[in-house]
Length: 381
Image 1: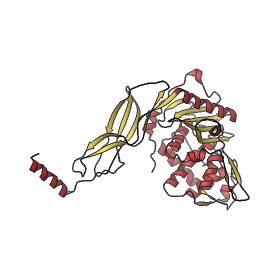
Image 2 (image 1 turned 90 degrees about the horizontal axis):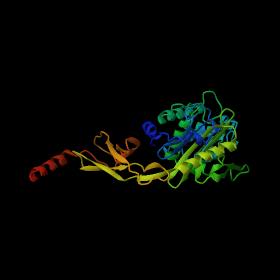
Image 3 (image 1 turned 180 degrees about the vertical axis):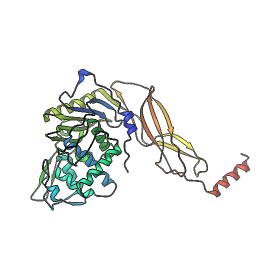
Image 4 (image 1 turned 120 degrees about the vertical axis):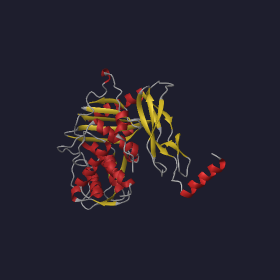
């Protein structure tokens, strides 16, 4: 099961570093946000909690559900899906599925990721959950797991419907969940062009609706959208060196302005901040001593890399570390979370990272326990 980015983690690390008033880089957007992906830290925000229509940015949550099902082994990339009349009848952007047409999960997912196809995402939703309504319930359950406070999904497509909305802040959490826990998405969202039905008479050319993946250095996703209510929306992720940014703009009146203001957000982030790697995944941080166990001690290692976000030009800054251990009982399994490594800047907590057991540790057998005690008696210890 994928790790859900915890709400405490977000509440700590989504602390805004505000851009000054004269640096309004998204003057035409209804709302916007820029975050660094590994830490979740907010670098820019504008009306981040305003509830708005979000068009096809909705499909990012649909993609999370689909990828989750694939990784759990409940569906497979090469499964063949038969398009229903309901899916084939969807308007808006589509890959023109016909009722009864068969297409693999992979090709349908490609149609969702590149062309933002409504018919493709509905076909996948029905395949995963049996119906659109059941799939939307899965979306809302995931929204609750992620701690989204201002989001409500009514459909898996993002087509305008009363009661269907989100915010820039919640979409940042969704986007981060997608790229950090399901990086497979980038193999699809980074493609600029491809084909469906390639070996048939109905060969269909796919061109990515996100033009920044072609023209912006490091861009490899993530989603665009437009409806009458939402206007032009976009979430773009780009990686340079060891830093990945996610920029979101909502409610733009013109697509070119949407692209330009998203670019401005990313430029601001890359020109202003740098990511410093402090520790690598798997580094030994501490150890615990065990009683009545087949192991005398177990090392605690980092579950993930630790990166710290700093203003460009910061050098030799020192951070403080604290270890917070959980209560635990035997047996311990490799990978069990046994504590947290907390990183402080002065007195401000800026990150918490899981410490996991490097190996298994089981309860000592009764025979082994008495044998150890006998040895201690003989040694006089």
